[in-house]
Image 1: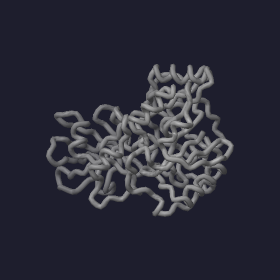
Image 2: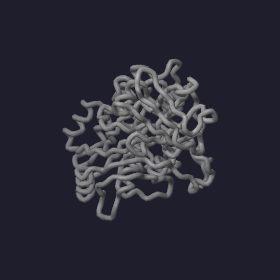
Image 3: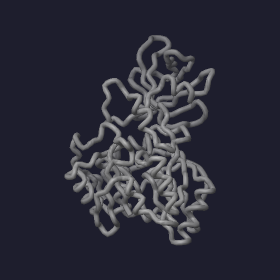
Image 4: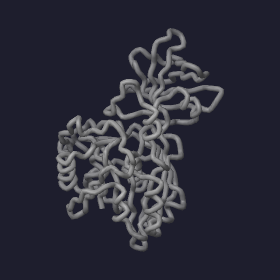
Length: 343
């Protein structure tokens, strides 16, 4: 299977630059497993859910992962983009300008005692950084960091106050993500309440969305690609709800590709297992889904792992047909764009 098979032309005008307001009034393309397509408004998703279903959401919270500082000795500008937490105070990061940063370099940040020491430089412009401060790193991030918007969302002066609020789901709770689980951006507290009133259970998982969201597949032979690992946790209550629902004929509706990867990683013959760990699960056409029955997702970049996952779930031909219709009808694509329900 070739990566070129998952390419399509995405016009710049189709890439949403700003969030839709209200969140649940964006457009929703419903793609049925038989190929039927419907065009709805997102809040109407409740009509496709029924008693006994479980809607699984990812409660990760985006941290201000883009830090702008200065070399302690020379004053040279440095950008550090947090990718993955290794342990307390130690992160894998993107370093810029990579060629001018040496191992042992200490970076300082304005109006805080936060310091970052480059412990190791790795391939691909990344490195390992140790952060030290008299206060928790998370507090300093919210003082000096910026919300890490994707590179296709353009801001002259950097992320806005609106971005800080809107680039989070309404149920975001556990800090650790460097990208939003964007399928969840469309839900409001009111919509979730209405869904629950229909007898649908809402269950939670955590997957700290890492740089897999920004990771570009490079190998033409799809099977040769590997994804960066991402931390996930499935609470016992969620495992119990999901397993019980499937045993009774209910459906598991995953909100976002991050939720899919967490659920499928911890699947077993007996259902969903509780637990935590790191997942490198790479889902592409041919994968047999064990837990997820329906998927809420956005429209994804060409040649991306997210597009491959949704192709595996919907079927490549059906999905690309839906994408073509969406482009013709003016749907908004990518992180701040409209949504799909594959059911």
